[in-house]
Amino acid sequence: DAKTTQPNSMESNEEEPVHLPCNHSTISGTDYIHWYRQLPSQGPEYVIHGLTSNVNNRMASLAIAEDRKSSTLILHRATLRDAAVYYCILRDVRGGSNYKLTFGKGTLLTVNP
Amino acid sequence: GAVVSQHPSRVICKSGTSVKIECRSLDFQATTMFWYRQFPKQSLMLMATSNEGSKATYEQGVEKDKFLINHASLTLSTLTVTSAHPEDSSFYICSAPEGLSNQPQHFGDGTRLSIL
Image (cartoon, rainbow over all chains, first blue to last red; front, side, top):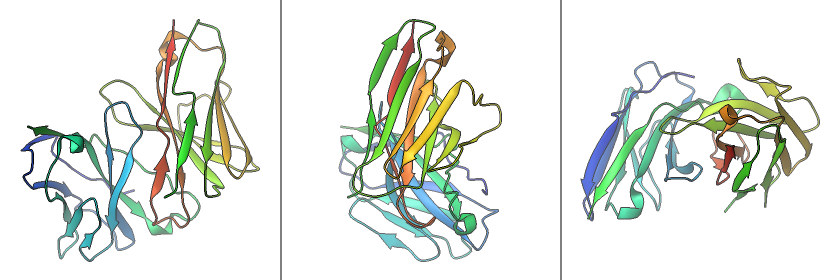
């Protein structure tokens, strides 16, 4: 799977929006952009995914650059419960039954009260 | 929504003990499940892919005789850490995909294994 680059850490204040960037300059046309997050001492949790168009769900929004070489996960109003490590992962849809995800280091998001 | 249940959540045992961890998909069938290991302050590392009705596929460097995987049904995969030693202490996490490869994976809450 193509590689992604994320900042090691980011900090936000409660109730404010958070924009988490991800660079994926070697993305291929069949790569979906997935975001997961991991709260302390828990397994990862799916957040959102997309291919080309921006996506919204109850948890977050995903903004994908026109050239698809970068994307941004947007938390509209950060809460203390959003403090976690956020992983941006590319997943080739041609993978078939082999759905494995390759986790990088992710971004540690700290939310200040 | 789809849920993956992992049990036990925590195990503390003596060196030399074998430990079995269960991973169940509660409301969907999973022909494939994945087992990850995570050391403190590190990211998840894939250990193996569990395939229902066939042998597991192990990542490079993972000893298949040490980490036994059984996927006997469409909703259950087990990981057995055989003759565990302190260096096997880690956070073990399973996951299962729901449907096609562009759909989310669902993760268990992990098993904290501590070998004394």
